[in-house]
Amino acid sequence: MTARLLAPHVPSDDQDEEELRSKNHSSTILNFSLTGDGIANAGRFLTGGDAEVAIWERLWQRYSDYPDWFLYDLLQAPHHCSWHSLSYDSWSEAGEDAEVSEVARAALSQTRRGARIIASCNPIKDDDKDPPCIRAKREYEEIAEVAGGSFLCIGERPNEKSPETTEFEIGQHGPRLKSKAMKAAAIVGAGSVGSQPLAHGS
Image 1 (cartoon, rainbow, N blue to C red):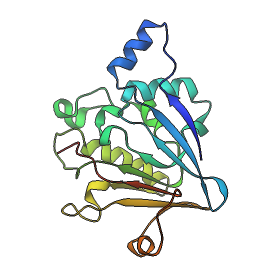
Image 2 (image 1 turned 90 degrees about the horizontal axis):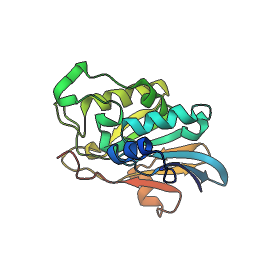
Image 3 (image 1 turned 45 degrees about the vertical axis):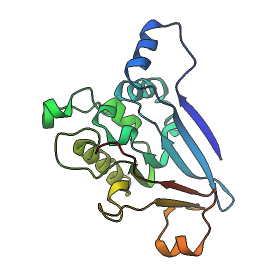
Image 4 (image 1 turned 90 degrees about the vertical axis):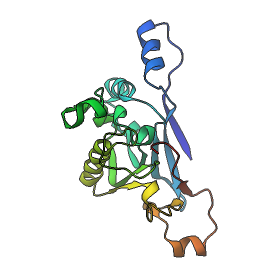
């Protein structure tokens, strides 16, 4: 396994840069390259913590010539599927008039074929709450659909009343969602990525 650190950068003397970080949740953003069945780079996992829209915009403006740095099979939707990772507008105030940042969206759209986007949050409702946000979910569903993949909310699997751990096994052809039969038959090792819903969005 190897990882590329996309953010945060080393402290800067640029006051505007430092202000941007402090106001926009400049979380650690990492892209992991995972080995599966002895095949290097069989799976890619992008995680961005609570990084908000301005951070994703800045990263894409700087590194759009290197889209491979953002490429993923699995994306952990930033900030528990928050709208603020995709937009400057308030979802609760603007509703459907809220505008997505196409630059930030581009950074989060560098999918491999069959990519899955995973929201580690409570069930996502069609309301004005954020996070998790129904509009963010729709954006991620569109991104995943273009890649021939899917969007998963951990708090809804297999159902909202009894969510269970979601695990992926990294094989030579990339990540594969582990079934109950697979979990029972194998000891979970370093070749799997697992998640449980976090408390955000209750």
